[in-house]
Length: 66
Image (cartoon, rainbow, N blue to C red):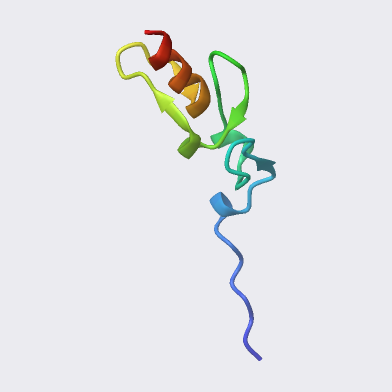
């Protein structure tokens, strides 16, 4: 009888990204500086100069404003 290997800890998240819907760990969660939405690390844009973290939607809005 074959036993299933447990999933790696980073794939067994308890939180859900509000943009893509994928699970992630609470410790790996990134919050948007503009709207405070919880996101996974793949759904954020980080400004390399300031370190500010924005979700894709707020980052697009900032580009349109600027």
